[in-house]
Amino acid sequence: MKKSRREADLLGSCVGRRVKVVKGTDVLSGRVVQTRREDNRSLCYYVHYVGSDKRMDEWVSEDRIRTISEVVDDYDATTPPTSDDEAVVESAGVVRKRRVTVEERETEPSRVKHINTVQLGIYEIDTWYYSPYPGEYGRLPKLFICEFCLKYMKLEKSYRYHLGECTYRHPPGRLLQQTGSLSIYETDAAVNLLYCQNLCLLAKLFIDHKTVFFDIERFLFYILCEVDKQGSHVVGYFSKEKGSPDGNNVACILTLPPFQRRGYGKHLIAFSYELSKQEGVAGSPEKPLSDLGWLCYRSYWTRVLLDILKDARGCISVHELSKMTGITSTDIIGTLESLDLLKYWCGDVVNMTPDLLHRLLLDIMQLRRKT
Image (tube, rainbow, N blue to C red; front, side):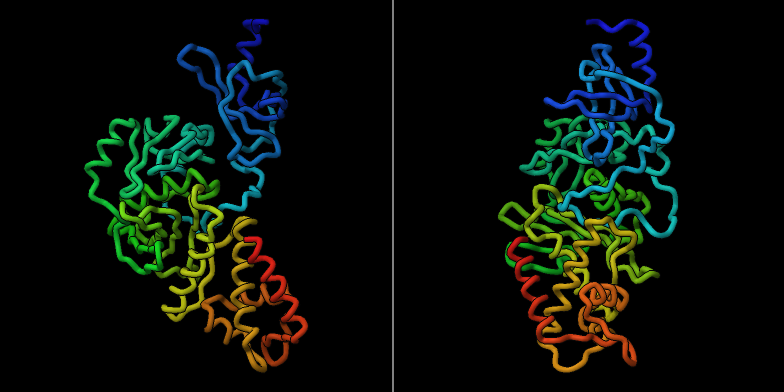
C-alpha cells in the first residue's frame, strides 16, 4: 500500500522520532538520527536502535519502516549504550581539553556513519562507527586504504595502481621490537604527521569515543605489525603523549577487527609498561577507560602482580611492586584490594598467604586457558 503524501512529508521530517524497523525476522525500536534521498528519490533513514551500541546504527530504506511516532525530546545521539564487545581496548576520550579538532567542529547530525566497509590489504572490514574522513571520502560506502602507508582512496582502480607504486613496506619510524613474526615501530607524529592522521582516522572507525586529532604532533604511536615476505602489516597500535603531565603511558589502544582474539591487545599493554620501566617511571592508561578497557587492564595487572608475588619471600611493599612492574601505586592498590591482598601496616604491604596465592593462581591459569 502506497504511503500518502502527508505520510511522506512526515517521513521527510522525522529526525529524532521513534520508529519501528524491520530487521530480518524482527521488528526493532529505534530513533531517526538523519535522513537522505537516494538517487531514485526514495527516502532513507539513519537509525539508532534503542538499547544497542552505536556500531549497530545503519541506513534503513523506507520500505523497512513500519511506524513513526513522536519526537523524542531526551534523545542524545552522542551518548550510546556502553559496548560489551570484548575486542577493543580503548581510552574513551581525553582528560584535558585540547585545541578544537575537525571532529569537534562537526555538527552533531553530521556524525553519521556513511563508510560501511574499508579494504585494508586482503581484508574487507565492516566498520563500526563514524570517522571524520574529509569531504566526499566521508560520504562513500567503501574506502580503499593502503595497509602500508594508510593512504585512503575512493576508487578500486586508483587503489590497485597505488599498490604497485607505494614504496612503504612498514610504518615510518624506529623499529623497537622484533619477536618472531611480530614487530613494533615507534612513529613520531611530529615527523610523520600524515601517516599518524590517517592512522587516527582508520582507528576512529572502530572506536566510538576516540577523539581524532589533526593536531597530534605531541603524540608517539607504537604500531604492532605482523611481518611476512610482503612487509609489515598493521594489526594494532597504541598512542602516548610525549611527557604526559599525568604520567599516562597510553592515550588510546586498538586491535583492528581481523586480528582480535589473538592476544595482541595484551601484547601492546605489556609493551607500554616495558617503555615505562625503561624510562624509570610508573605509568597508567589515560582515564576514563571504557568498561571493557578497565577489565582488560585489571586482568593484565592481576597477572603481572601474581607472577611476582608467587616467587616473593617475606613482605613486599606497593612501592617495590611499582618499581618492578612500571604500574602506578594507585593501580596496584586497586588491583590488590580487589583480590583482598592488601594490608595497611606502616605503609602499604601485600598480605599474601600460601592458600590464597594458590587459589588466585589457579583462577589465573583457568582464565589463560579461556583466552
